[in-house]
Length: 173
Image (tube, rainbow, N blue to C red):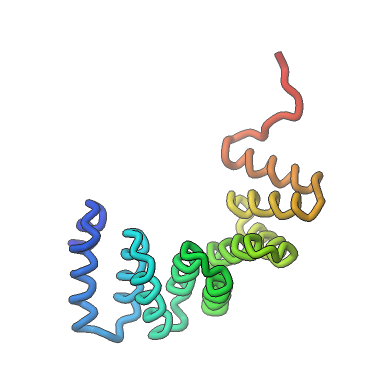
């Protein structure tokens, strides 16, 4: 609880120091490495965050959230291929981790693999039909692939979810 209070108040350095002290006592704790890495990512210390999250994933390959968060850090660092690998590892560990699949779709879209990105976004929507990011990502991918009608439908669904109503195609005065 103390660490969470420090982090919530913005004292990331003190919170990280406490996690590091705990890790000295329990160096094989994947969860402690995961919590430290996640904290460091929030603090913007991406290199250290990646190192801690890699340790967590190495210590417990089944900790899908560690792989997912590592992917997020790698993506922020511009390492899209490594991020995709981390998201795939998260999905091996936990195939129903929606955020890892959505994140994979996003990185695949960024790297230009539009067919795989589309498949990833559609898989997210099959599992979580109201996932905002997947609707937006799918719409963008469909538009880039030259499917404007399908893209418009996906954009409208995104708007319905995000704003409570889809924008109308005509305005009334």
